[in-house]
Amino acid sequence: MTAARFLIVNADDLGLSEAVNSGIARAHESGIVTSASLMVRQEAAAAAAGYAAEHPDLAVGLHIDLGQWDYESGEWRIAYERCVQDDASAVEIECRAQLALFRDLVGRDPTHLDSHQHTHMSEPVASTAERLAAELGIPLRARGIRYEGGFYGQTGKGEPWPEGIRVERLVALIESLPEGWTELGCHPGLGVEAESSYGPERAREVRALCDPRVRAVIEDGGVQLRSFAGEDLQRASS
Image (tube, rainbow, N blue to C red; front, side, top):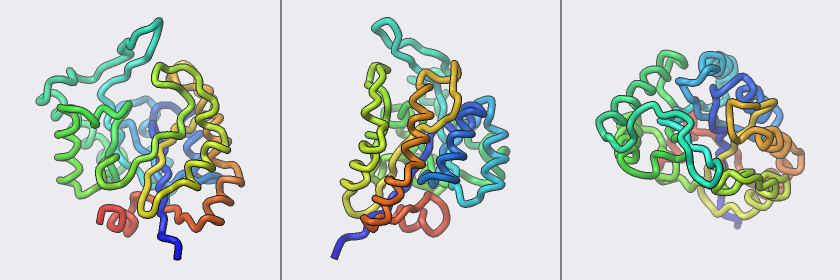
Protein backbone atom coordinates (compact mmCIF):
# COMPACT_ATOMS: atom_id res chain seq x y z
CA MET A 1 0.00 0.00 0.00
CA THR A 2 1.13 3.55 -0.73
CA ALA A 3 1.79 5.66 2.38
CA ALA A 4 -0.49 8.68 2.79
CA ARG A 5 0.83 12.02 1.52
CA PHE A 6 -0.73 15.29 2.64
CA LEU A 7 0.02 18.58 0.89
CA ILE A 8 -0.58 22.11 2.15
CA VAL A 9 -0.08 24.72 -0.58
CA ASN A 10 0.57 28.03 1.12
CA ALA A 11 0.70 31.41 -0.63
CA ASP A 12 2.97 33.97 1.01
CA ASP A 13 2.54 37.78 0.96
CA LEU A 14 -1.24 38.01 1.26
CA GLY A 15 -2.02 41.70 1.84
CA LEU A 16 1.09 43.03 0.10
CA SER A 17 -1.04 44.64 -2.63
CA GLU A 18 -4.34 44.22 -4.43
CA ALA A 19 -2.41 42.56 -7.26
CA VAL A 20 -0.98 39.94 -4.92
CA ASN A 21 -4.39 39.43 -3.29
CA SER A 22 -5.92 38.87 -6.74
CA GLY A 23 -3.34 36.26 -7.65
CA ILE A 24 -3.80 34.38 -4.39
CA ALA A 25 -7.58 34.48 -4.84
CA ARG A 26 -7.27 33.06 -8.35
CA ALA A 27 -4.86 30.34 -7.23
CA HIS A 28 -7.19 29.42 -4.36
CA GLU A 29 -10.46 29.42 -6.29
CA SER A 30 -9.18 27.92 -9.54
CA GLY A 31 -5.98 26.23 -8.43
CA ILE A 32 -4.45 24.29 -5.55
CA VAL A 33 -3.71 26.99 -2.94
CA THR A 34 -5.26 26.00 0.39
CA SER A 35 -3.65 28.46 2.82
CA ALA A 36 -2.10 31.92 2.81
CA SER A 37 0.09 34.04 5.08
CA LEU A 38 -0.95 37.63 5.80
CA MET A 39 1.41 40.63 5.94
CA VAL A 40 -0.58 42.75 8.37
CA ARG A 41 1.37 46.01 7.90
CA GLN A 42 1.07 46.11 4.12
CA GLU A 43 -1.35 48.30 2.16
CA ALA A 44 -3.86 45.63 1.13
CA ALA A 45 -4.04 43.76 4.45
CA ALA A 46 -7.56 44.93 5.28
CA ALA A 47 -8.82 43.90 1.83
CA ALA A 48 -7.14 40.52 2.27
CA ALA A 49 -8.86 40.04 5.62
CA GLY A 50 -12.17 40.83 3.95
CA TYR A 51 -11.53 38.21 1.30
CA ALA A 52 -10.62 35.66 3.96
CA ALA A 53 -13.88 36.33 5.78
CA GLU A 54 -15.79 35.54 2.57
CA HIS A 55 -13.71 32.41 1.89
CA PRO A 56 -13.40 30.55 5.21
CA ASP A 57 -11.96 27.50 3.46
CA LEU A 58 -8.74 29.48 2.94
CA ALA A 59 -6.63 29.08 6.08
CA VAL A 60 -4.86 32.33 6.98
CA GLY A 61 -1.69 32.58 9.04
CA LEU A 62 0.62 35.40 10.09
CA HIS A 63 3.53 36.25 7.79
CA ILE A 64 5.91 38.02 10.19
CA ASP A 65 7.24 41.01 8.27
CA LEU A 66 10.36 42.55 9.80
CA GLY A 67 11.91 43.93 6.64
CA GLN A 68 13.00 43.17 3.11
CA TRP A 69 16.34 42.87 1.34
CA ASP A 70 16.80 43.02 -2.44
CA TYR A 71 19.91 42.00 -4.37
CA GLU A 72 21.01 44.97 -6.48
CA SER A 73 24.31 45.79 -8.20
CA GLY A 74 26.08 42.84 -6.65
CA GLU A 75 25.00 43.32 -3.06
CA TRP A 76 22.04 42.92 -0.73
CA ARG A 77 20.32 46.21 0.04
CA ILE A 78 17.60 46.84 2.56
CA ALA A 79 14.30 48.02 1.11
CA TYR A 80 12.66 48.61 4.51
CA GLU A 81 13.04 47.51 8.11
CA ARG A 82 10.39 47.47 10.81
CA CYS A 83 12.75 46.92 13.73
CA VAL A 84 16.42 46.23 14.45
CA GLN A 85 16.56 42.52 13.80
CA ASP A 86 19.52 41.72 16.00
CA ASP A 87 17.70 43.27 18.98
CA ALA A 88 15.74 40.44 20.61
CA SER A 89 13.53 42.80 22.60
CA ALA A 90 12.64 44.89 19.54
CA VAL A 91 11.88 41.75 17.56
CA GLU A 92 9.59 40.44 20.30
CA ILE A 93 7.70 43.72 20.51
CA GLU A 94 7.20 43.95 16.74
CA CYS A 95 6.12 40.33 16.33
CA ARG A 96 3.56 40.62 19.12
CA ALA A 97 2.30 43.89 17.66
CA GLN A 98 1.79 42.17 14.31
CA LEU A 99 -0.06 39.32 16.02
CA ALA A 100 -2.35 41.85 17.71
CA LEU A 101 -2.99 43.56 14.40
CA PHE A 102 -3.76 40.20 12.78
CA ARG A 103 -6.40 39.57 15.43
CA ASP A 104 -7.90 43.01 14.84
CA LEU A 105 -8.05 42.50 11.07
CA VAL A 106 -9.10 38.86 10.87
CA GLY A 107 -11.02 38.52 14.13
CA ARG A 108 -9.23 35.39 15.31
CA ASP A 109 -5.81 33.85 15.82
CA PRO A 110 -3.69 32.82 12.82
CA THR A 111 -3.81 29.19 11.73
CA HIS A 112 -0.04 29.06 11.24
CA LEU A 113 3.09 31.18 11.48
CA ASP A 114 5.94 31.96 9.09
CA SER A 115 7.97 34.98 8.01
CA HIS A 116 8.88 37.21 5.09
CA GLN A 117 12.20 36.13 3.55
CA HIS A 118 12.38 33.36 6.19
CA THR A 119 13.75 35.62 8.93
CA HIS A 120 12.45 33.18 11.56
CA MET A 121 15.07 30.67 10.49
CA SER A 122 17.78 32.56 12.39
CA GLU A 123 18.12 34.22 15.79
CA PRO A 124 16.77 36.21 17.48
CA VAL A 125 13.62 35.93 15.35
CA ALA A 126 13.67 32.13 15.62
CA SER A 127 13.19 32.08 19.38
CA THR A 128 10.41 34.67 19.27
CA ALA A 129 8.57 32.84 16.48
CA GLU A 130 8.90 29.49 18.27
CA ARG A 131 7.56 31.05 21.46
CA LEU A 132 4.56 32.60 19.70
CA ALA A 133 3.74 29.40 17.83
CA ALA A 134 3.87 27.41 21.09
CA GLU A 135 1.64 29.91 22.88
CA LEU A 136 -0.91 29.78 20.07
CA GLY A 137 -0.62 26.04 19.52
CA ILE A 138 -0.05 26.45 15.77
CA PRO A 139 2.55 25.19 13.29
CA LEU A 140 5.67 27.23 12.57
CA ARG A 141 7.14 26.86 9.10
CA ALA A 142 9.79 24.16 8.77
CA ARG A 143 9.28 23.00 12.35
CA GLY A 144 7.64 19.58 12.39
CA ILE A 145 6.05 19.83 8.95
CA ARG A 146 8.39 19.44 6.00
CA TYR A 147 8.74 22.65 3.98
CA GLU A 148 9.25 22.58 0.21
CA GLY A 149 10.53 25.89 -1.16
CA GLY A 150 11.62 24.67 -4.58
CA PHE A 151 8.76 26.26 -6.50
CA TYR A 152 10.35 29.68 -6.98
CA GLY A 153 11.25 31.75 -10.03
CA GLN A 154 14.48 33.47 -8.97
CA THR A 155 17.97 32.47 -7.92
CA GLY A 156 19.40 33.33 -4.52
CA LYS A 157 20.63 36.62 -6.00
CA GLY A 158 17.29 37.64 -7.44
CA GLU A 159 18.09 36.60 -11.01
CA PRO A 160 15.20 35.20 -13.10
CA TRP A 161 14.89 31.42 -13.03
CA PRO A 162 11.75 30.60 -15.04
CA GLU A 163 12.48 26.87 -14.85
CA GLY A 164 11.64 27.02 -11.16
CA ILE A 165 7.98 27.91 -11.71
CA ARG A 166 7.05 25.93 -14.78
CA VAL A 167 4.19 23.46 -14.63
CA GLU A 168 6.69 20.65 -15.15
CA ARG A 169 8.64 21.78 -12.09
CA LEU A 170 5.51 21.87 -9.92
CA VAL A 171 4.41 18.46 -11.17
CA ALA A 172 7.85 17.00 -10.40
CA LEU A 173 7.82 18.41 -6.87
CA ILE A 174 4.38 16.92 -6.20
CA GLU A 175 5.30 13.55 -7.68
CA SER A 176 8.36 13.37 -5.42
CA LEU A 177 6.54 14.19 -2.17
CA PRO A 178 7.52 11.85 0.67
CA GLU A 179 4.93 10.26 2.92
CA GLY A 180 3.42 12.43 5.62
CA TRP A 181 2.85 16.18 5.58
CA THR A 182 4.49 18.77 3.34
CA GLU A 183 3.94 22.50 3.04
CA LEU A 184 4.71 23.81 -0.45
CA GLY A 185 5.37 27.55 -0.57
CA CYS A 186 4.30 29.79 -3.44
CA HIS A 187 4.01 33.50 -4.28
CA PRO A 188 1.13 34.08 -6.71
CA GLY A 189 0.06 37.51 -7.97
CA LEU A 190 -1.57 39.18 -10.99
CA GLY A 191 -0.23 42.45 -12.38
CA VAL A 192 2.38 42.95 -9.66
CA GLU A 193 4.66 45.92 -10.40
CA ALA A 194 6.97 48.01 -8.21
CA GLU A 195 5.58 46.73 -4.91
CA SER A 196 7.77 43.62 -5.18
CA SER A 197 11.11 42.63 -6.71
CA TYR A 198 9.43 39.29 -7.39
CA GLY A 199 6.94 40.59 -9.95
CA PRO A 200 6.40 38.91 -13.34
CA GLU A 201 7.15 35.56 -11.74
CA ARG A 202 3.98 35.77 -9.68
CA ALA A 203 1.65 35.63 -12.68
CA ARG A 204 3.56 32.62 -14.01
CA GLU A 205 3.07 30.94 -10.65
CA VAL A 206 -0.69 31.53 -10.91
CA ARG A 207 -0.77 29.83 -14.29
CA ALA A 208 1.11 26.81 -12.98
CA LEU A 209 -0.94 26.54 -9.79
CA CYS A 210 -4.17 26.59 -11.84
CA ASP A 211 -3.00 24.25 -14.59
CA PRO A 212 -5.21 21.13 -14.84
CA ARG A 213 -2.12 18.95 -15.18
CA VAL A 214 -1.18 19.82 -11.61
CA ARG A 215 -4.59 18.90 -10.26
CA ALA A 216 -4.44 15.66 -12.23
CA VAL A 217 -1.10 14.58 -10.79
CA ILE A 218 -2.41 15.28 -7.27
CA GLU A 219 -5.50 13.14 -7.85
CA ASP A 220 -3.72 10.38 -9.77
CA GLY A 221 -0.99 10.16 -7.14
CA GLY A 222 -3.40 9.96 -4.23
CA VAL A 223 -1.99 13.15 -2.71
CA GLN A 224 -4.48 14.72 -0.31
CA LEU A 225 -4.74 18.53 -0.37
CA ARG A 226 -5.06 19.95 3.13
CA SER A 227 -4.73 23.29 4.91
CA PHE A 228 -3.56 24.62 8.26
CA ALA A 229 -7.13 24.99 9.53
CA GLY A 230 -9.29 23.01 11.95
CA GLU A 231 -8.95 19.26 12.04
CA ASP A 232 -6.15 19.42 9.48
CA LEU A 233 -4.12 21.54 11.88
CA GLN A 234 -4.36 18.92 14.62
CA ARG A 235 -3.27 16.16 12.25
CA ALA A 236 -0.40 18.19 10.84
CA SER A 237 0.90 19.11 14.29
CA SER A 238 0.74 15.61 15.76
